[in-house]
Amino acid sequence: MTPLTEAFMTIWPALMLVMFVGAIALSYQIEKRSPDLVNRTGVPRMAMFFHTITNMKVARDGKTQSMRRVMLLLLAGVIVLFVVVAFVVSGIEQPMSDAA
Image 1 (tube, helix red, strand yellow):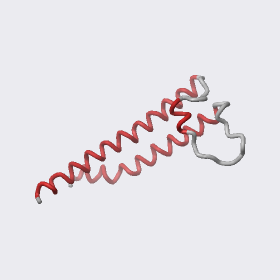
Image 2 (cartoon, rainbow, N blue to C red):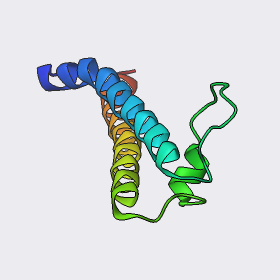
Image 3 (tube, rainbow, N blue to C red):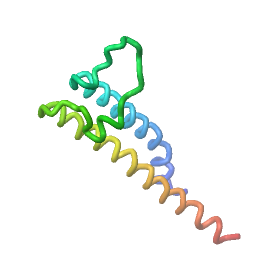
Image 4 (cartoon, one colour):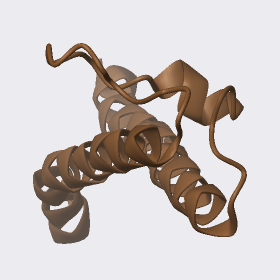
């Protein structure tokens, strides 16, 4: 494995975690700014990703929509990193299967 691949495979899990936790935090902030999504029960609940991703019951003001776009970019980044890692892993394992 090349040093660049090794470094990437070491860093990507932390990067994925940071991006996903950031998306979750933004989802909670979007919920607080959206009157129809505010948690009034006082009981903690999971982030309402489906609503915030699809823009369902989300406030239409510019700040909230800007936060939503950033959240979507973070989630897209997570997907892109998964695809990149799939290519890296397939590239690593391919030479090993050819040698056999």
